[in-house]
Image (cartoon, rainbow, N blue to C red):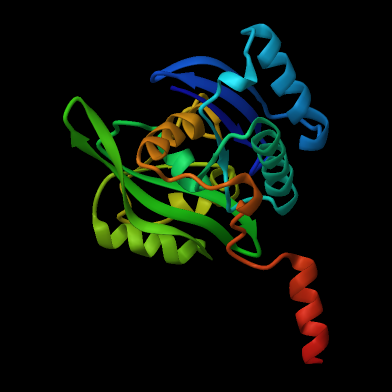
Length: 238
């Protein structure tokens, strides 16, 4: 089984190929260029490096949201175009589940934080449960937008060790550090941002479970309206 993973949901652009539970290649950047400049050249570079025949793919896994509206649209369009051109199904991997997968096997609660601005984060709460020779991802709180104080209160109620990751960590680090009674840590630099390898690995599991969609019906999961839509709604109310 061979899965291509794509993640452009945040500041990071990342593509990867997983074959039979082994990472074959991954190309990830976190720099000042836009995803429209980087994603397709990265994919082409990866394809050339490992002599990848795109027709040999079983499916294309894409970080389906939430995240940057523009980044999600670019990733979605790339996945849809490849899926339609190659006649391959897509696997929609929720962005925060992909982030949580970066910490596969940890015995602590995992809490990804993506900066959603306006004192909000896209977040969820996850844990890994032992299953045979591996682990499965279990959702305690599904991904949603909420204020940073609300997610910290929920974590306090669970009274367990938690590890944070994502681009919301540097934004709200002080809030976390001031949260009395919270037992926490932060993921290291190799695992604290989106990685297409995690999207592909989780996508492979979902593919085996039959959780695929046709490229023509795939669309990103934004979870909330864009700023332009919110401003338009306010204008209609006024």
